[in-house]
Length: 264
Image 1 (cartoon, helix red, strand yellow):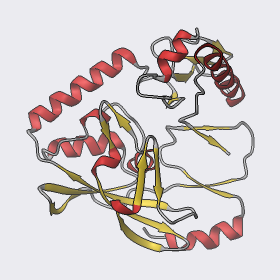
Image 2 (image 1 turned 45 degrees about the vertical axis):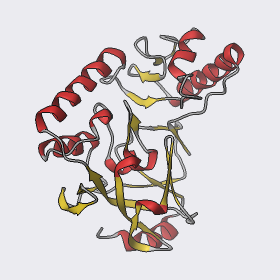
Image 3 (image 1 turned 135 degrees about the horizontal axis):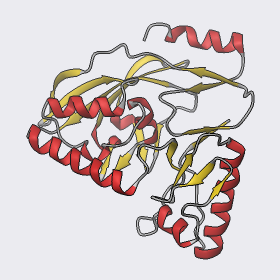
Image 4 (image 1 turned 120 degrees about the vertical axis):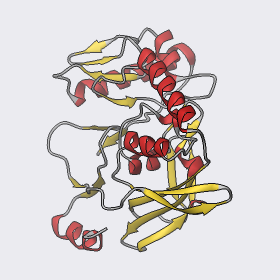
């Protein structure tokens, strides 16, 4: 948390739009120079138990901690609930802001409180009730200005360590067989328009699976993953995104909305 209070002054001095950067795993940035002021931070909080409430143990972790490291820590402590998030990269802070979810688990379901900094509020701890969690989104209610997450406290039920680890291995094995988890990508490109209309299926039905342009390509394993094969550019990525939206709309009438964050 050191240095956060100096951020508003630094932003005013340097100019540009603040762009909090976690691990950058769900971002596509436009090519060239951008009017952005990147802000990132190293972990400063130790990850550990801080109490118990309502039969659940409270695990506090730094927002800069990687999500895989958080899941490993939870498993080692016998804390269940997060197994479905196995295989999702990125940081805890990014997962909170996106309300990352997979295999029936959403991070927002387990949030107890959030430590954050904003130029209006300063450094504060806010309960989960102050946030609106929805599909791939998280809003701080009544707050329109930017804020940075510095730590998150999760309320997690107890579980058997062996069962938790077995569940995590099963989830990752299944994802590895159906998703390009080891490719260069920003994760799922589009949100699912509806529970019974996943974006990947709509894209596959529109003939987009494996379709490429330059160095970018929709994965042949899962169409909703746009992978960079090495020399890909954001211009090529945006062209494929627009093409996918057009083809899916023509074929199914569904409007695909991007899940990835586009800068700026």
